[in-house]
Length: 58
Image 1 (cartoon, rainbow, N blue to C red):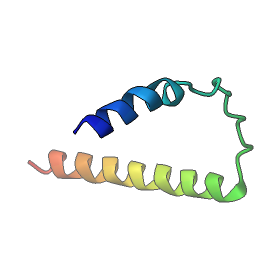
Image 2: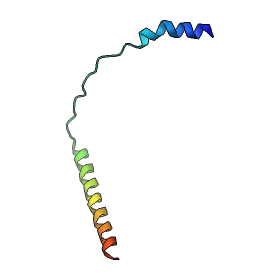
Image 3: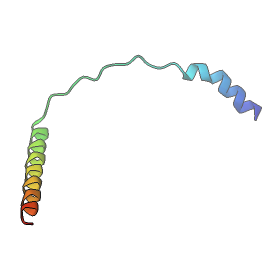
Image 4: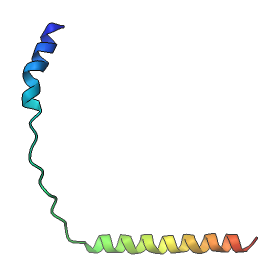
């Protein structure tokens, strides 16, 4: 039991050092991303129209 505690006490200061934060570089939007965004937008609009149609039927 003492060995793991001693080992943790010795290694703890070396583990605590972290790298400096590096900002992520934004990637350009690809054609596939634009197509998937368009498809998601169309599906959302279709869902909104379906909900409006279901509500107006009452």
